[in-house]
Image (cartoon, rainbow, N blue to C red):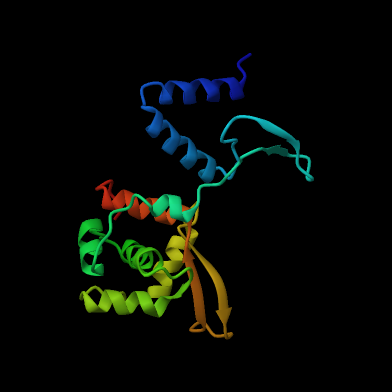
Length: 179
């Protein structure tokens, strides 16, 4: 009988076989983040963690800085928006969020900032909260809500673009789609 774990390893090995070392690293970092696992950088184990899981010496997660360090820079939001060419309100909101978080350096932000940027380009979104909620419903989430002040539906909400959201926008900037 076939072992599903061995089959998965074989499929990964076949998928990575023709890639250069740098590309393999990007794929493996994406997979580790996508499936929420830690991987050793140098392959050496350092015993076990307090929770019983393996603890790895030199283990590191891919940071937002590493994700964005090779991203193209844009002087104006209009340039980024044109390069990404988002079609749906969901994608427009995500591109604006990417701008605010990555290029303006805000670790967290309110939705009104996004709509201000979009309005300046003539691309305002009728309901920015719905567009952000749509990104939050994606699996994995592209945006997360960090806080909410007030009890009404129009309460002030604070958001952040996730690792997956950053990667998605960078794919749009490379012309890999995203409507």
